[in-house]
Length: 251
Image (cartoon, rainbow, N blue to C red; front, top):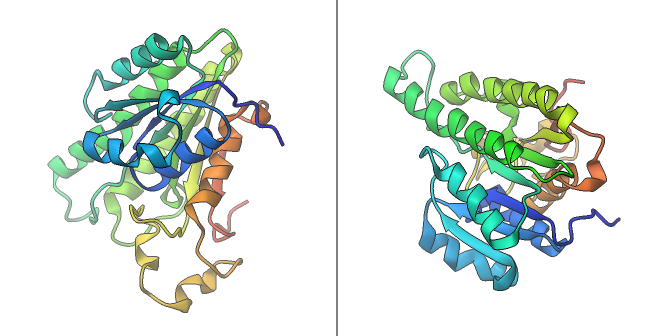
């Protein structure tokens, strides 16, 4: 299937590791032009050759937690490539925590990093969309639908971001801008979301609750995310897609 991504321009945040990196590689393979962002500029430069041709990539070191980074990314896309068609927004991982013991400062920091920063980027991309519309995919986890032990702050904030994304889809739909979320389950990645963390080094029993009886691969997650992002998914918006081997038991 042709996803219709050739020479379209997308921002990818968190592009140096984990699921953001996996999404960037799939986008490059499908012919997209990319503006890649990561907080560690050296790490981003080191992985860039594994993503695609340097002439089709623009590296913009920066942390979406910092206000103004989203504006720089949008401006860079338009200056270099003359258009912007959407973004893959990585939403980070709050530290392990409990609701009972987490200090107010922990909540505030996680709110800035894991909710407000990604939301700022999504809004900025939507406002800068081409006349053809745009598409935003936010990378979240299954804590949107079910809490995970030891991830109290993430359990509290992630559903709020998912609902904000769904509301944004309602607001932007008349302009042809789509917003979807992709919810990760247990995946074999180096930079793990909190849902993946319990799966590392625990043996076969970890997969017993997963109908497919195995961990997922980053590329399997990325392909699902990029389909939603692409013109091939042009009538899908406001969706939260679980990519977890069937572990999510909700409809």
